[in-house]
Image (cartoon, rainbow, N blue to C red; front, side, top):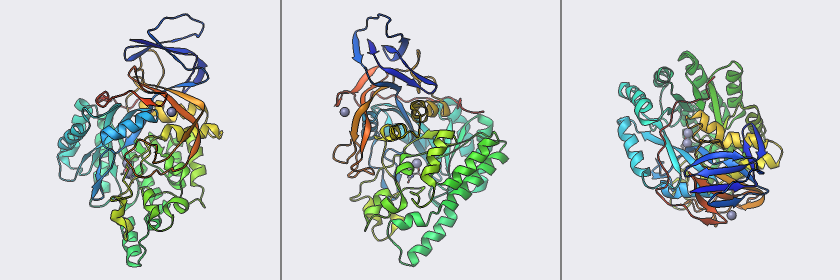
Length: 466
Ligand code: URP
Ligand code: ZN
Ligand code: ZN
Ligand code: ZN
């Protein structure tokens, strides 16, 4: 099956140009001068539109058991929603619980995902119990399983938490086998003290989730993670869901020193705030309980994050998609904010939300594509199979209409969530057509994909290191 995407502007990280894209089977086979005559079985008109690589969301948590419940999107519903929003690859987090064999945790995640995904998927591995066996498992996952990144937690004592010794040992192992350490950088021991003190004072509303996780404790943990990575002979380090200016400063300083330190942020930190969302009246704010938390609009976080995206101190935008329904799930924490399941859903809207950066003049078109597709592919060993519109790459493509509009609402989204973190947003730009490995899966507001189309991707080592 050959398909020609005609008349569009192909956008990549290094430039944009008019070109027709020829697809044969699952691959892009040529970028052609629009004047060059070619025949294809199917032609798609992309006049006036951008042709971009399919989005790669490098941070999702489909059906994650967490906070006494489980994230409400399954691999099936979550990847369907991702596809609608122009994301054609997710990297989800398989979990080793404390005391569990790492490979058993991984097998459980394969079982959840296999045959259920609408788009291609890969895994990072969360290590919830770093010990001698887990360190050996890291080597095996890198060598045999295509898992080349490991997430550790400085937060959530008693759940996923690793102490500094465990972190150092995992970093030393990663330094030797070439893997990336991903860090949830918040000082969970100090946070737990603040949480207990707040609850003892009777402060139970959702906003206290944010107030007990101050930016200073994200900055402290980020600095500590960077120091530990330095002690581990400059182990590659990637800070996830960075939300605070001072944490960004720490990353920028390490990068200025030439270190392999990277960071991502998420749309929620670019658009939503402690006061306006987490501080919504009554229990409403529970919808926006996530960690790291939304930050204060009276501080410079959002401005600094946008700047970090331009300067590449923030290299990637992921969603940290971890949805919980308001009814029945977020409700678990009514009367005690510490029992509200942590997470926001957004896998469907990342591409559109970041396009607003282009509309507002904060990001170039090329930088938009780089942060949502090309860099995640390079960072996590999927490039050039994914993340670029080029001959030989998978035909994962989005035809994006800059003149279209997107309306975000729980009534119209495809995520399995009874609310939207961005309810009522009317934004510029629209995902028109989505192609996954040569198959048109979204076109003209109709879904043509199927569960089971998505394949597991074994990843290589990062090709982003200095
Ligand atoms: O609130 C969040 N971020 N939930 C998902 C788990 C994590 O820490 O990434
Ligand atoms: Zn996290
Ligand atoms: Zn996460
Ligand atoms: Zn549409």
